[in-house]
Image (cartoon, rainbow, N blue to C red; front, side):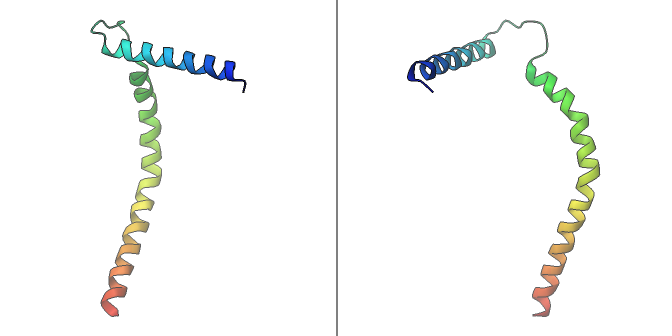
Amino acid sequence: MAPAAAAAAAASVGALLRAVASDRSSPVSRGGPSIEDVVREEIRPLLKDWLDRHLPPMVERLVRAEIERVVGQALS
């Protein structure tokens, strides 16, 4: 990337970060949900579904491995 293009990109990102920081520290709200609120609400059912499908077998596997480790140590 050319130095001028890199400098322009860095300046744009810096301006965006300052604008976001300014909006977050401002006591005035725009009246709508933040992007974090929207993402949180959208991801909640996806995360719940993933946990419902994957957490029980994961816990069972980890507990089984720990029991085998403890029993192995006791028998040694």
